[in-house]
Length: 66
Image 1 (cartoon, rainbow, N blue to C red):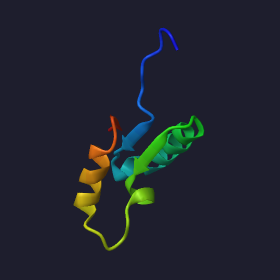
Image 2: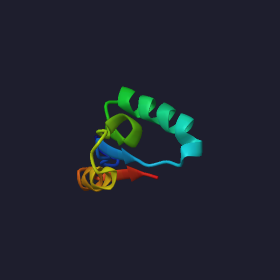
Image 3: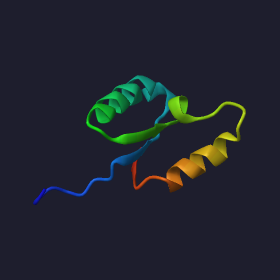
Image 4: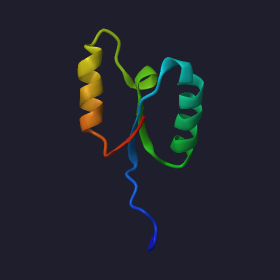
């Protein structure tokens, strides 16, 4: 992979609710490329503290898409 940037396979996707359709499309495209992704609507557990889940997810990735 000479000449290519070292991009983490672990990505946190954050988005505004008005951009939810775009976030879903981006998630699908990156997943198809083999990335490990975290997106709140698909990864959060109901009944748990939502902010703690987000903080934990951020600590577990090297790349964020905002």
